[in-house]
Length: 220
Image (tube, rainbow, N blue to C red; front, side, top):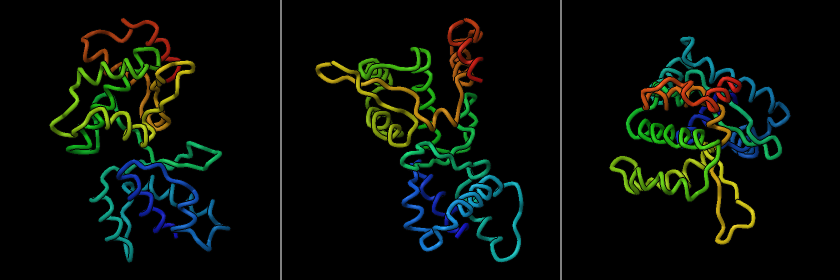
């Protein structure tokens, strides 16, 4: 059951889809639900160690294939982001502000855009109204040659993947929303990394932004 769960989690992670405990029980663990916690614990340990050891014997080619198909599996960790509904995500230390992405091609481009969005939100005080976000999206162009509709990517895909969160702003007509970092972003990067990225792009020292620098240091 452990190997099946690892495969299930990796496939889900390809689209950064949050994983429900109910789905793991229904599709993988099934009649072994009494040992659910142990199976999940072993799967999590396996995900963290896939690239650290070479496995031999029956599963050797299987693990070798996984590291080719999923080069980002090294260092993955299963994290529960909603303890009430029991929703999990796989996280690693990416995206890093220095651009050291393990993903390639289109996904790397998306992570680059995500880093810009996260930086924008952080520098604006950790939340932005959708009107502010719209201005940024206009600057980035609505259509991109690599990932198409930028607005849809940011407002739908990044939200679904838990990189961003939207919250309704009370007493607004028409209704307005604010964007904040989501739980996946909180786990995969840091305010210090993002501030260093902004500083590098601006050619300034991170201490130039005293408020953000102090917040990033306290959060580190």
